Length: 304
Picture: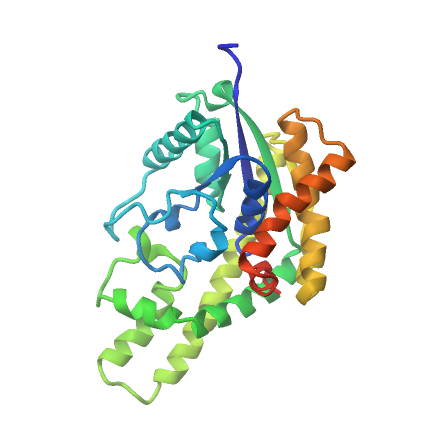
């Protein structure tokens, strides 16, 4: 029994694909806690820009490693990242619960798992779920989501952290949304009114473009992890969710993403998942998350 590996679930995918939502769905079904693995979300602040999951969206599920770094200019090294994540894994396992790791920092996740010095794979049995969205569909949603972030206060949030001549290659200021607004804030600070509105429009478009570039890089990285390193990534396709709206989107998410992912994790945990048991657990588990935050909020969270 002493050689038995601990079970860990990873929820992966491009930015804006619904990883956080799925992790909460799973944690509402299995006794679990969620570990953030998005390196930018380790930093305190810029909650809108970094898309940190809100308290209401967490549905009472414990979340770890969100906003734990106070210094906005501190560097989070790969070694730091691995220590943080492994520490949280063991804390959760010690409580007899399943660690669910979610985030888009795939290079750091690769370093965590493939590091020969830590022997992660010899100690942990990993289940990888990849939430897939066709890129043209995802790009369209990203543009919509950035507009929603702007309406929700993205510019004001970035303004509070603006410092002339800041180093955007370090710390939280690397987050997409901070460097793009630099020229706009400088013009604003200098009282340059003539082109200020144009600079803001350009900055917002640049945020959209850079977020799409990030999604492409993440997509390519996930393919490399699967095709070159041989990671067994269980794909669940959320494209149809993003092509629908309202309750249709919520139902599509439940049937195409939540239920298949629960089945994948159930098999991974070697538990008995009969169809009857699945239906019963769905009513008391995942669907409770829908009730907890309201269908309207959940539909918005899906991103359609």
